Length: 170
Ligand code: S3P
Image (cartoon, rainbow, N blue to C red; front, side, top):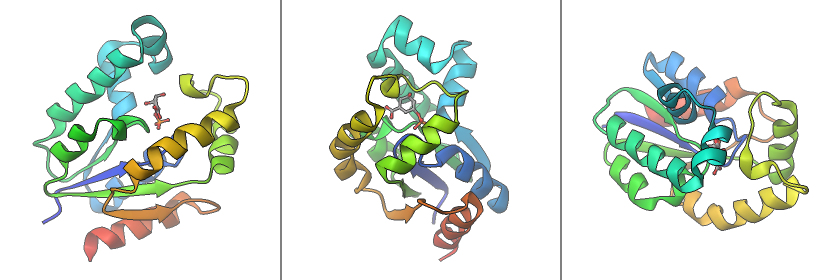
């Protein structure tokens, strides 16, 4: 029995947008990890990275994972790097459907450049496309451990959400 949907994937793969739509359609709750962490701390993700370091941010992601472990009927959208803490994925796996939202590096860059309100410290470098390619190459095998993979390139978020709802309903 699926009690939770966990949307994983690289930055700008649509986890927050699609997650909200899926939660609406299922009438489930929705938790965006970055948003929850920012709200709890009263700090933006970029400030947490700058003032406390990435390692501290990863600890906050781990804490939040433990908090949501017992939640049912919830769509979770952790940040793109959550997948690197494999033990967190395994904690959530029972009774969850883990879905990888896939996006090409060029798609990620294009979306990143149009979402100027979201600061992404890992992409704040001289050559963001090269950074996307190298981080994605390192993480792709981890995302590949998801139960399902759904393509998001050149697709409307509503269409992607419908595909995920259908996976849940199967
Ligand atoms: C990160 C992804 C971001 C955010 C932080 C680090 C990553 O979330 O958690 O900037 O390591 O991939 P999104 O995937 O929602 O952009």
